[in-house]
Image: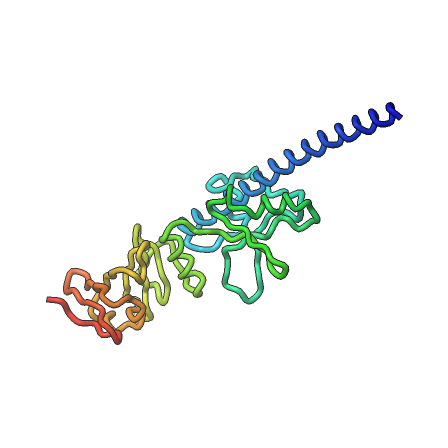
Length: 235
């Protein structure tokens, strides 16, 4: 009887040690999984600010971004990738990685924001995903333009029509007549703008500016946006 109890004790002790080792390994693996998602989110934002378009994951797998040896392997489900949904404009989602049956502590650790700064895990019975949290106002404004169907060219040309383009710290909009409105990347429609000529003062794009915004005509006059989309000259 004593031998049986000793054997049982040893078995339980070894099992407990193995269980503890497995938990530590899983914890480290989940932390690594989160780190992968964080790096993807960081480089998603970097790509937006550099290329002015939405990246596919393969666009980030080079030395300018994640590196050529970056691994997206996931033992808790399918490989890490962006979530694409038909009929949605939300491009700030990574597929939820925990798709297999796992112990609750693994999922709880994965969902926590303790190790997350650029992402947030959302999980419910109907919908689960990891959200990319853009950090800069510049990236948020570029995302807003692209999500609304806008196109941002990397280089501005006077021949552009109904497109945005990049000018250092600014974004220009060329209308149907190839006349431009220039926005600050950080402030966008919340800030002041410069226009190429008085002809642009009737452009409906200016309706989106906040009341009180200044409109500078290049090398000329200054105007201010009033309520009811009125634009009045400032002396």
